[in-house]
Amino acid sequence: MGLMNTADAALDDKAIVAAAEKALADIAVVRTEVGKVIFGQESVVEQTLLAVLSGGHALLVGVPGLAKTKLVTTLGTVLGLDSNRVQFTPDLMPSDILGSEVMDQDETGRRSFRFVPGPIFTQLLMADEINRASPRTQSALLQAMQEYHVTVAGQRNDLPRPFHVLATQNPLEQEGTYPLPEAQLDRFLMQVDVDYPELAAERRILLETTGTRESSVKAVLDAPQLMGIQNLIRQMPVSESVVDAILSLVRSARPGHGNVDTDRHVAWGPGPRAGQSLMLTARARALYDGRLAPSIDDIAALAEPVLQHRMALTFAARAEGMSVRDVIAGLVKTLKA
Image 1 (cartoon, rainbow, N blue to C red):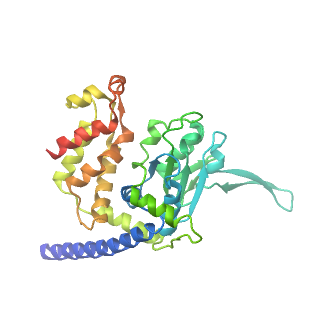
Image 2 (image 1 turned 90 degrees about the vertical axis):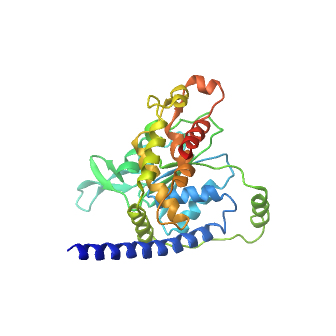
Image 3 (image 1 turned 135 degrees about the vertical axis):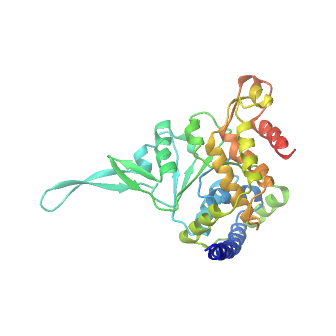
C-alpha cells in the first residue's frame, strides 16, 4: 500500500509539473498578446493578471489617460471571457447593475414577473470609476464579489464562472465621489497603482496609436482554460518558511501585535483575508515567473498591492507626511532581514 501511495504521489507530481508547463506557455502567450496594445506598464499588467489568475478582483488606481480601461477590455478579449462595462455615476442604481423584475402578460391576460439580468451577469465586469457611485450602489457589488451570486426579490441568481471585477478609480478627483467602504476594499484581492509610463513606452504610444492602423488582440485562452490555471495555482505547494513570512508580515501590520512602528503609525490593519490573498497571489507570481513554488521574495513584491488598501494610518502619522507605502516598506525590510 505504501508503494502504491508513493507511486500515486509521483504521478500526481508529474501531472502538476506537466500542467504547470502548459500553464506557463499559456501565460507567456497572454503576456505577448497584451503587449501588442499595452506598452510598458509591465508591473501593472503583471499585478492585474495575477489577480485574475488567482481568481480574485482588482482595483486599478490612477489618473485618467493611463490605459486602465484599455487594459481591462484587452484582458477580457485575450482571456476569452464574456465582459461588460459599467460606467459608475452618482445616479446609478443597484438595479442598473444587478438587473430587475419586469411584469409580463401572456395571451390569456395572466401576469407574472420575469427577472431581467443586469450587466453583472458576465465573466469579467469592468466597474469604471467605481467611487463615483453612491454607497447604496457600491454595496450591490459586495455580495457578488464575495459569494458569486446576487439576490433579487428574494431569489438567488448565480453568476457565471469565472467571475471577476476589475474596477478603476481616479485618486485625484474627490468632488462628487464616494470613497469605497473598508468592507468593499477588502473584497479586492489587490490594489494596482497605475503610474505614468516610461519615456520609451510613451514614445511608442505616440507613434503606434496616432496612425491609420491600430493593433488589435485575439483570444488565446477561454474560460475553462483560465479556471484550470486557477485550480492549478491552488494546488501549488507553499513552504513553511513562506507561510511563516506571510503570517509575520500580516500580523506585524496590525497595531497591538508587537511592532513598535505599526503601533505608532497604523490605526487599523489587515485581516486574515490579506493573508489568503498573499498565499494565492504568491503562488500565481511564482507560476508567472516559471517557478513551481513561491518564495519570500514573492511575498515582499506583493506586500504593497495586497496590503495598502487594507490599512489606515493614524492622524498623527498622516500629519507627519507618512504614507501606507512607507509603513509597508518598513515591514518588508524586517521580513527580509
